Image (cartoon, rainbow, N blue to C red; front, side, top):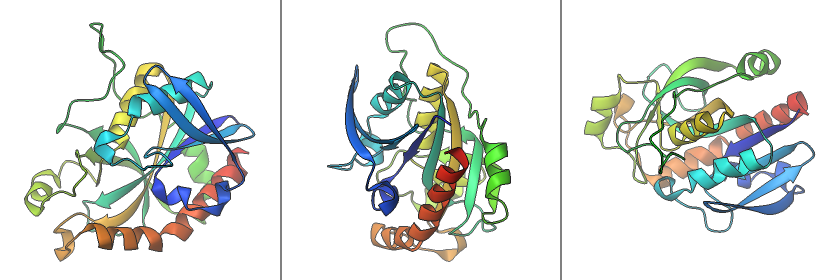
Length: 232
């Protein structure tokens, strides 16, 4: 099945994709480097050579590249923080809606009076969840709250937004918006790497965050192994 994957820096460290071809495609918004194998391509949203922080990612180039390569079904994996004590680090979720109010959306409609209906298609999610069960327990129907980054949210900010959704991140809403504009099907998976700042009495910093990401690397590798088996 022809499916494109978008993921973050943790997947670059996975040996699963070491033998995939590295290619570059030019888009009207800039070049995009991606990995390819058979019917699948993989984009690291942060880039490969010099990983960009969330607020400087070239989202338009990434999504335009997938459309130009002929992909309509996109499976995304995002690292998120939990806004719900019942969703601890190490938990997988799938988001079906999102909040993105801190910064205006990324859009392809810069020069025309045109918008689009936002949404997350999740057309592959039902079948993927069935195929991944019982090895993976994934909680669907969650709401993603997007903040600007690159810093984590303050404890006061978390107190404001903790009832807006279930998880918090810095990337998925932009990707979902752009996919909707181009008619691409965005499928959401997210791995909770930490509790949001102050939730459950936690403190967070980048060093601790990267340690948590490393701890979850084996789960990410296994999830993508299953994706490739199911969608291959």
